[in-house]
Length: 509
Image 1 (tube, rainbow, N blue to C red):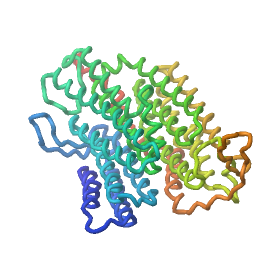
Image 2 (cartoon, rainbow, N blue to C red):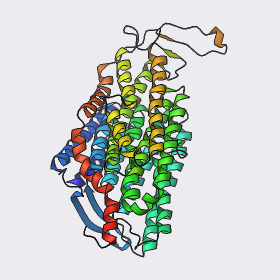
Image 3 (spheres, rainbow, N blue to C red):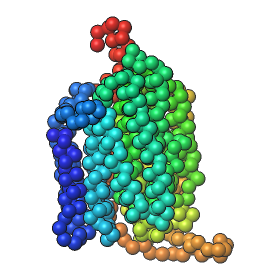
Image 4 (cartoon, rainbow, N blue to C red):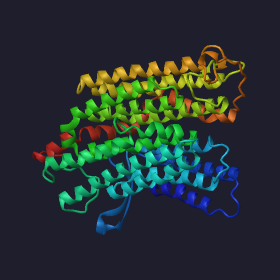
């Protein structure tokens, strides 16, 4: 059943690449949407077959592949990976639906979207370290191509920067996995915790440090974040949706699955430092967002801050905080995708994302009133207002982390308050006031505020954003279904250090 989640997008990608005749963009898009709709339907079937009361891996599939080097085909799913598989299926479909006017190499563009979706599924489902690494690296080149070919004017710089940072991330992760085999003297790359009797604490800390930096680049955490704003600024709207909503979660998933899950003893030793790192990342991301004039860069820096909440939750490693980490990954995926979609609509209709230029877009007659309404909903969700997905996730993270790290948690709460500040600046500058665009000029004093009438937004342009907005509100009002899926797995992960200590002391597991 799980292998089908890989086969659907991969077969779809190869079908597009070898489609006979001249590629028609509209036809390529329709085929891609149908393939991704099938993937989403199969993901829902996996959800129906999933047992929420079982905290272990389910629906497992395995066979020997290259056993001589420890590479086996092993797939499984649990309460940590299932929500991410669902969010990948949903947001990749949204990316394809909101893709318009792809006249340049449409065959390759849509094939790359499908390849990324399949690779992400493989990474979330892999139970073998080397298999995870193969899927982790498989999405690198397609995303680089999506930015470098279909990006903005500075796309070459942004794509190269992304490629270098992510390549370093992969090298560190692979080095840690191979180092584990070297230090233990085995070629066992299964997902098992590393105990002190297998590996000295110094070696554990070395391997954990490499994984932390590798996944910290992907998340990204300060100071490894600098590639993200550039990548988002130059990427097209559908690629930004995919990058923020799905691909960043590979880093946070790796943080929980491989760092905390495999090195629980070393993780507990570093936890206070990790909580401090989380607070720095949250505050820096929030303050940097306040300083931005470009709407897209502001949303990108907000991702840096919101990813820090997941590191805080993982550092605390309580059942509540880890459940909050899962909620935060899902809610951030939906909210960031919604915001990037709306910023894309504003840019298409006005030709700018500059907050010093835009004014009064909420004007009911000549502006973008429905887009502005959805934007207000999105920023409210990101700021953590009750009734939205952001509130549930942040509440769980802060509630689960406060007792373990009160100072770091309070600093992250300050960062949450700053979210309201910079998004209030965005909404107030761009959507309120008199409907106008102030054109740039060599003489700022001579700039005239020009009244304009923007082209109406077609319903088909807002349907993906409306679907995401409904998801944001639904999770905020009815969070129980997601909690039931992930609670058992997050509790088992939180209790892992105590269980291992009991086993080492001769207790009964």
